[in-house]
Amino acid sequence: MPARIVRPILLIILGLTFGAAAWQIVQLDRDLDVRSAADAATADALTQCRASMLDLRGVQRAYTAPDQDVRFWRTRAAGDLEALVACTGTLEATATAAAAPPATQVALAKLRAAVTATRRLDARMADLAGTGLRDHAYDLLYGDAINASVALERELATAEAALRRLDLGSAAAARRQQATAALAACAVALLVAFVLARMPRAHADEGMRQAHLSVVPARTVAGDADDTPAASAPRLGERAASPAALQAAADVCGALARVEQPLELAGLVERMHGVLDSRGTIVWIYDEGNDALRPGLSAGYASTTIGRMGVIPLSSDTPVATAFTRGEARSVRGTSEAPGALVVPIVTAGGVSGVVTIELPPGNDRQPATLALTRIFAAQLAGLLAVDPRPADVDGPEIVMGAGTARTAAATGDTRERAAGRFADLT
Image (tube, rainbow, N blue to C red; front, side):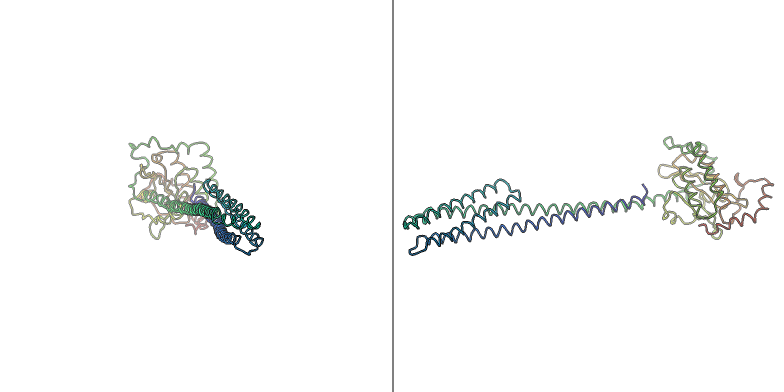
């Protein structure tokens, strides 16, 4: 998949991951706020329970005191008992909302039973005090009432402990979930950063493969007959000789003949690259000022890779420089570490104007159909490069022409120069 598509997809995935993690953390914070409010309500209920228990104990002692209005104290005791019932209900609601375990539910049930027992005992004491049997009420106060009060305090403490363990566990679970969401987002971010950091290296590898063309010793296509293609390499030359490939090549040649603007060449070189089915294609242009070749048009490589290639001096012993100076096609045999390549000069009537290089899998530099199509494209490009050709040092098979052809070229030299002037800004 092209890097220009992979990068946006990775960034979108990263943004969605961070968004999901942030949403999860915010939701858990809201849950913690709700639990904090429930904790506050539980604490208030427990405080109210204890206050009502103490007040109820004082009311019960007032039943047995002389000259006391029993109806007044009975009304006050009813209020305390209602407060105890309400507090117990609040604690039960909190446990139900938090999905409390059975042990907590049992503790709350025992607390309600203790409240009910205290209520019944208070009613008996009030009835005895109201009928003048204060001695009997006194016996209940320092007998069953003390036991009921102790049982109520015990069950309230048990319920409080059970609820406290439940709340602490819930808060800890929420914090763990928040930490998990944050760590997952960080892991995705690191993975995306790793992939993005590795992608430029792929372009650098392409540049290294292309640089291989500039340092491998040159040889002619016809030489080294003992070099055989790798058996496992795809036979790109056979595809180049297919009727569909030849038709596509004819279409590209027709389009090259109709070029009017330099910008059109970039798209046509891309089409050439597709027809040749190569890994990468570069059109090297002769730079007379530096007596070197510089990359002009390319397909299959990143723009940053082309920018790092620099120029190839014609004095260097490289396939590209040799193909240019001798006017002969060259091949670079591929290996398991580096790809193969074909290097074809762009020959005009006055000499050589540039070089076309195509990068191929190991063994495919020997396919005749691929070489033939590359030479055809190079011939079509010969009339479109606005550079002064350089005469080749040795006449190779691609620049030999008859005397009649030479006279025709000399007669039309001015016309060719005017036509090439349209592409003076080609880089």
